[in-house]
Length: 240
Image 1 (cartoon, rainbow, N blue to C red):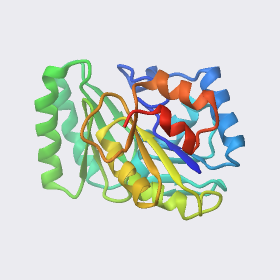
Image 2 (image 1 turned 60 degrees about the horizontal axis):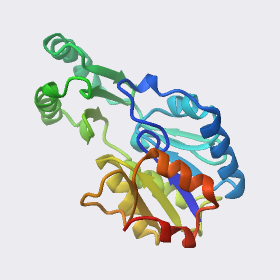
Image 3 (image 1 turned 120 degrees about the vertical axis):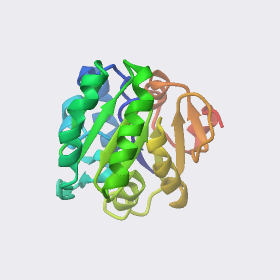
Image 4 (image 1 turned 90 degrees about the vertical axis):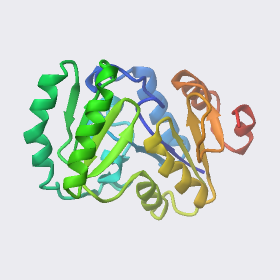
């Protein structure tokens, strides 16, 4: 078995601002323990940059896909990264006007994408979505929807492609993937895991999903991962 994990909303709590998520000794130690038990078959597949994943997990996991797969560090440490899309400069140029009209929005410039968070000002959601839709319609940028977030990124690999890439390489190749995630951005990952003979585990309330199993929240995930080595028998403890 190989274990692939989303970060925010899966093994770390959702916070008002992404940088509010900080390392914790218990989480770091658990990731190190899992990597050892799985002989390195542990990967993080996140919308965050690899640098941000390393900050939150204190470098405990080597194999990391960041920005939904646009950058990927293999288990052997080699780094693959897409080229920044020039159209992101248009987002950066027009974003100040949106921020002036809707104070309280939080933005992230990941180099390969620009993200607008409206969790703190949900009433701005329609305006953020319209802004992102408009720019996506005028460029080749991909609108990556999420929970109270709109992200514009360059075309290229997504979470599903990142999972397939990991699973084609050592030490993951030839094993069954189990992917845990919480957001709409994880659906592609669930589908990829299933297509490869594995399992998707949704974290959060029940909804229509490509995942076949579910855990209630981050605490439930951490308890499940801590209880024992996840394996076939463990799935009996998960909601369907």
